[in-house]
Image (cartoon, rainbow over all chains, first blue to last red; front, side):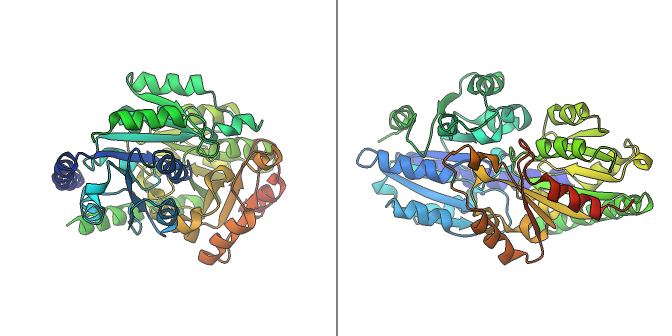
Amino acid sequence: MKVKVEKKILTANEEFAEKNRSIFIKNKILCLNMISSPGSGKTAILVRTIKQLKGKLGIGVIEGDVQTDLDARRISSARAPVVQINTRGGCHLSAEQVNLALKKLPLKKIGCVVIENVGNLVCPSVFELGEDAKIAVLSVAEGDEKAAKYPEIFIRAKVLLINKIDLFDAGAAIDFNIKRAEKHVRKLNRHIEIFPISARTGQGFANWCRWLLESSKK
Amino acid sequence: MKVKVEKKILTANEEFAEKNRSIFIKNKILCLNMISSPGSGKTAILVRTIKQLKGKLGIGVIEGDVQTDLDARRISSARAPVVQINTRGGCHLSAEQVNLALKKLPLKKIGCVVIENVGNLVCPSVFELGEDAKIAVLSVAEGDEKAAKYPEIFIRAKVLLINKIDLFDAGAAIDFNIKRAEKHVRKLNRHIEIFPISARTGQGFANWCRWLLESSKK
């Protein structure tokens, strides 16, 4: 019974994902689905990315949160169009929610839509939203074995951003070895692009923003 | 349809939670359900707690992970009885899984069972496992606004452990204000106990371990 219903939910979701895909193709928009644990720095990464690409790539954001519009306000202050979705307990965004949000974004004026999913390394991984690529984010404070323990998102992501590398420079005692993290991830996904970055200092953003520009369709 | 089935799943879960509660009462065992994002330091906290309370309170552990037995091995090396559950994609532990795991723990010899739930700040909050208390864990690297954004666990927890406070001493640039975090949490839950700790250095463990001893039933 449970399995059947889950299949139904997934199928309904896939239909909306397909609608979203058509919208992105029609408008030549690159769509990214950003997935990570709470507090890995997704919003901070977005704010710096938006600023760094101003004039080169217009980015619209769909903010998924269980509650509050704190993240949408941060995006808004970077002067990017943003739509907030509150899931009110829901642990992931659905393609239908994204479909509704897309109606509120100025699609003609932007080249990229980033969906910041609910902070959750497990559930959002298996719900397609119509995106071109999933972007996984991991902060160095979380430990370098996360890919082994939570494989689904690392199997599916095209890019992994390893954030907060400025913590190394601060001399904090951080048990995170970038080489070891990469090894865990590559075991699951040979072709994933990995960019170590710091949303605070901007380290590594040149490479990440180059990838974004090269992947955009406009 | 979806809502009905979710209700059924929750009810079946509640029946097993009730069975687990009876087991804990019969064996005078304090049961804690530890919930946090991936990488907040749940296992490291457990390892130090087990060592610090050796001879005073015997702790058995049920380790919930999507994949791997990495965490169970860490607990095992602290010489505590441990049972690993792999959810294979599942985003939370169920009371039935805990019920099966309990059969493998030496309940007569221990005074406390800690269930380390799957790293996920959203889904595990609403599935009762029969525990006496939920323990929320937040690392200072995750940001101090998490209670506002992910309220469910903070509403339900009896204790909040704010981990990795050693990062402050290291002089790392961490946007986390303990007073602000407490304010967000207390808005949802006036009676929650909050212990700032470091599993690395042991700071704050005296208070946390005192709470554990005072809450134990043996």
